[in-house]
Length: 224
Image (cartoon, rainbow, N blue to C red; front, side, top):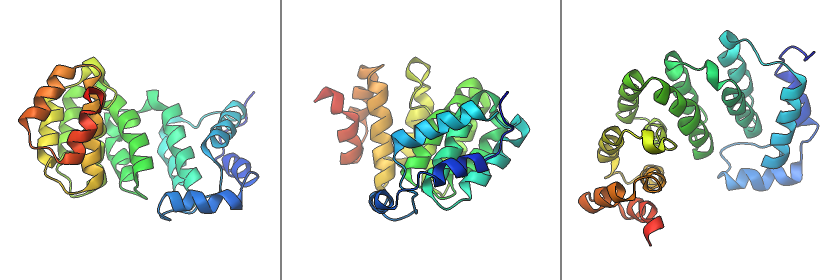
């Protein structure tokens, strides 16, 4: 029988594998926005697999309480662990959880966390409940928070044939004039990904709209 969920079990595993020599370069890679334990991705994922094999998941109504316990710790690896917990319990996420996910996106924001939450946790909710989810993504696209805008752009990243192009293109049109690197990059990324499914539609959209050079270059990578 598995032990009862206790986020401190993750802390114990991570602390036992702290590596100060790797922590500095990892922090530098993230522009020193966060401190790190120095646990690289393969080992971190292994430690989490061990933890999830040993401990039961929290009750669904306690999910975000436990997520925040990890997210409020200073080292970035704990934020990744919180996002891994969300992914582990994705079947319990509903449309009612989008406000909580938005708060998570807008907290300790950087591309690594946003790009893990938006196409997965947020995207799964929108796909499961498009009528309400798409309206929320339009609200997010109008936010004054750049990372929330990026999340709205990337929410359909993995949709393939399920892509709502009207929604995607409306959100892109709102932001295609942005000088923000992370917005330009997100636009190019989602178009490049959708081009694998519907290249002609992407080619036509790029031809018809004055995208920033970075967005256009990223969108057209498969065609060069």
